Image 1 (tube, rainbow, N blue to C red):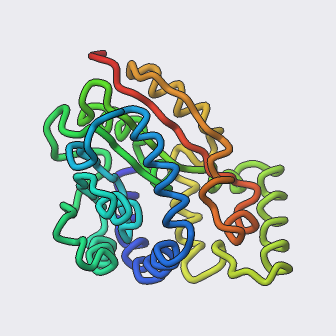
Image 2 (image 1 turned 90 degrees about the horizontal axis):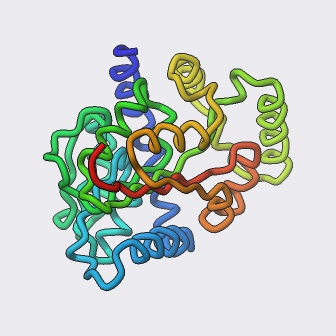
Length: 259
């Protein structure tokens, strides 16, 4: 499992420029508004009456910086971490004038270098599935949250098709429908075989989620709920066709005291 950390860094270094293009398209379209509406509503519900600049947000696995950028733009106090320096370079570039308002740091999501209770919100997207020790990551994310702090984790069962025949059929249907619809296929490209090899070895690829997340976070003493329809609000039409068989879900959890 430990080799996966260096393999992930190498893989995402190679994907940084292309992945950054995806984030820039999000920033240039209505998805910028859709994502902030979804996130801002949930943060506002947890911290009613609190000024945005007083809410400390940690984005784990920022990649090219989409969440960090839209949250900083809205006035939140944002720290954003990623394992891959090339991704952080892209994030700083994409942030433009906002870069000085975001604390970008190179860091492992499973071993955070922050004190206990440092943040009001921890947020992440499309990261947990890729981790060698996701349970450890959740424990760390909980640790750095303040009491009554909010965890928002957006993810999907991305590589279930490597282990499940029904999921494989859905995946193949997505590829056909994407081609027939004239969309760019987000699952075809250079070095995807490398990521599939990593996915076969990380623990969550073959685990049905978000049920797994609910159990782990509940055991950590957090109040947990899920939204398995959140993709309908935040995905573009292209994403809905590309990933129809692997809809994005949200795991939303609140830290309640000590475990």
